[in-house]
Image 1 (cartoon, rainbow, N blue to C red):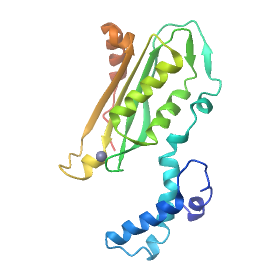
Image 2: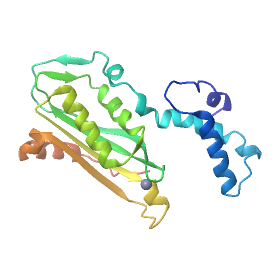
Image 3: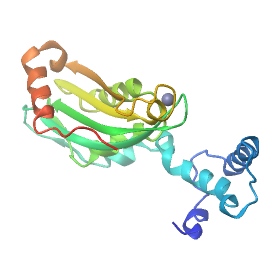
Image 4: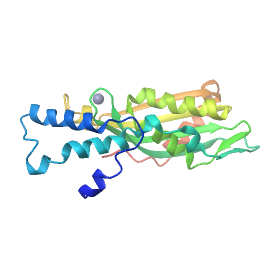
Length: 207
Ligand SMILES: [Zn+2]
């Protein structure tokens, strides 16, 4: 990436304070014994500040803008499933990435959402400081409140860099979390249909 790409467009109104991030990163560089003025690090504080607009932009994403009219009245009451939605998040304990995929299903009750919107909703919650369990629930709760469906189910599988790089260094430290509402919680067959669908032809999660 060219540095020009990095410095432009830093005035997003997303509440992220570039100059505070820049001075904090500069302090961290000094604190770990680095020289923030050496060539390779010269622009690092600014790059990091710029990067957080993207990585933590989910706080200020407006769900109304994301949905933007893609809510349709449809008489359809079979399961709608979007699987293998790739996401990148940051764990709130270490600010290191956890990355993986989400599978989202719902059974409509008169309302459906344009399919391309579901990955954007996942993104809205992934681009925050997160814990995987909360992110999973937030996606499910959002769709429940928006669509008032007969049921909604979310399964998230992720690899956490903080467990892979440090401590016990479990390179395949994978975690699966789920959140279910309505029919997926109440009805075993519905839940099993969903779980069978997301495990069909599944590829192991890899970095
Ligand atoms: Zn962590």
